[in-house]
Length: 241
Image 1 (cartoon, rainbow, N blue to C red):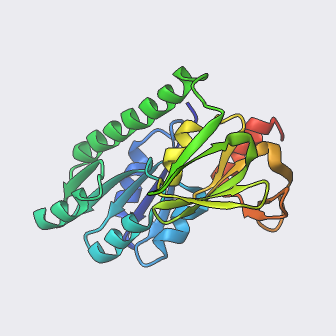
Image 2 (image 1 turned 180 degrees about the vertical axis):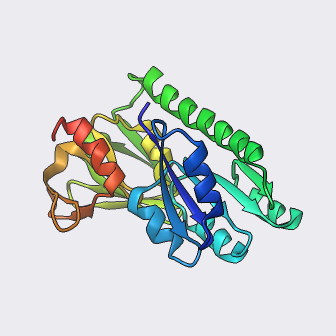
C-alpha cells in the first residue's frame, strides 16, 4: 500500500502535529500541517487526503464547517475537542473517533489504527472485485430511469451531494448520488478521480498539462484541474514519468 496521506489541522503551536510527526513512521505516513487560522478547505483540496486529524479545541465552528464541505466520503476524520457536547455534534458526520482534550497519544494512536483498517478495507474491496464494473449506470428520477453507457461519459463533476454527468453528445444529467458512489462502480483503469470534484474518462482525455498548475483537457474542450496527490495516481495508471 502507498503512503497514507494525513493532514493535521492544528493550532499555531502545532502540538498534535509534532507528536504525530515524531511517533508515526515516515515510511507509512506522509504528514502535512495546516494552521487552524488558515483555510482548511484549500489545504485539504490541494491533495484530497485519506485521513484528517483536527485539533478543534479552539475552532469548533470552523471544524464543523470543514467537515460539511468535504466531498470525499472516504476521508477518515479524527477530531480532538473540548466537550462531550462537541463530540455529539461531530459524530453526526460519521467521523472515525472523537478524543477529549487534553489527549493521550495512545488514544490518538488507536483512532489512527482504526482509520487505517477502514482505508485498507476499501483498497482490498477494490482489488478483490476487478470484474464487477458494469458497462452502464442508471440515474433515477420521479418519472423515469435513464440508462447511460459508461463509454458515452466524458466526466463526472460533484455538485454538493449531487453529481453532474457530462456525456460525449453534450448532454448533462444530474444524479442524486454523490461522486464517491459512482467511483465505486467505475473501472479505475478507465475512470480516474483526478480531483475531489472530478472523475474523468481516460478514453476522452486529450492531454495533461504539468506546468503552471496541473490540469487536463478533455475531448469536449473542458479543462479539469488535477490535485497533486491525484497526479501521482494518474501517472501510475497512464504509466508516465
